[in-house]
Amino acid sequence: EVDGEEQVSENWENIKLKEGKKSTLDGLPMQLPALIRAQRMQEKAANVGFDWPEWKLAWEKLDEELQEFRQALENGDPDELSDEFGDVLFSLVNVSRYFDLNAEDSLRKTNAKFE
Image 1: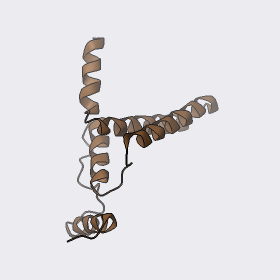
Image 2 (image 1 turned 30 degrees about the vertical axis):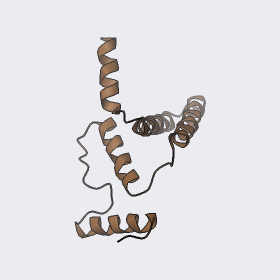
Image 3 (image 1 turned 90 degrees about the vertical axis):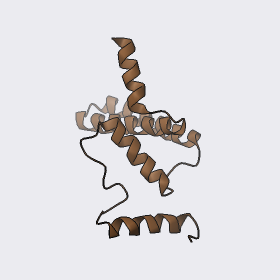
Image 4 (image 1 turned 90 degrees about the horizontal axis):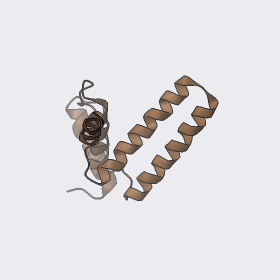
């Protein structure tokens, strides 16, 4: 029996170490499409308690990342811009998770509409 969220997380990490994995996120194939991989990473993190308690906080994080992206645009550094854009996408995928949306499927549908 576990006694609290911290112990759940600790037990999960111990199980993964026994399986020869370095972290909770090990085992996700690098070949997965980036949106799917991001969603699965976030699901795994949420399963061990590393998650925002409500969608509004995830949305605030998305707003923060959008502001950082805008700042990177002003700075004109291509590497910083790429990093911040990735952070925006990752945060947006996280928001989608709160509404049981599959980011990959949603983008695929929008691509089809655009065609």
